Image (cartoon, rainbow, N blue to C red):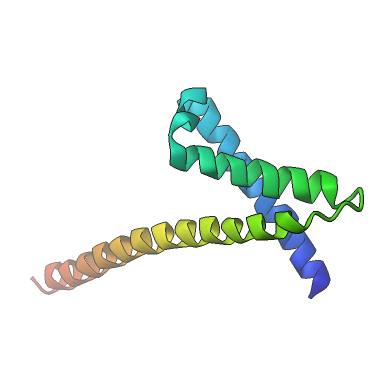
Length: 107
């Protein structure tokens, strides 16, 4: 389980960093002037990149960093919630297509 958690940590850090870089490329630096997106960037860079790829490999364990890492969980939950809403809409659309497909098949 420890190896899985470490791999997951690096995977999600890379994923969040990729998301940050794409948003920066598309929207520019002013996108992070909004408090919510600035908080997201802070979470990605401080608890993700700085902690996972720099501090932990050097053996530096900062106690307050653990509290900040809880915010990463909230960020992940927000992404899951958004995906679930999108999947629900896609599921309703698919059900409508299947229902109309049956009707078209029988006519």
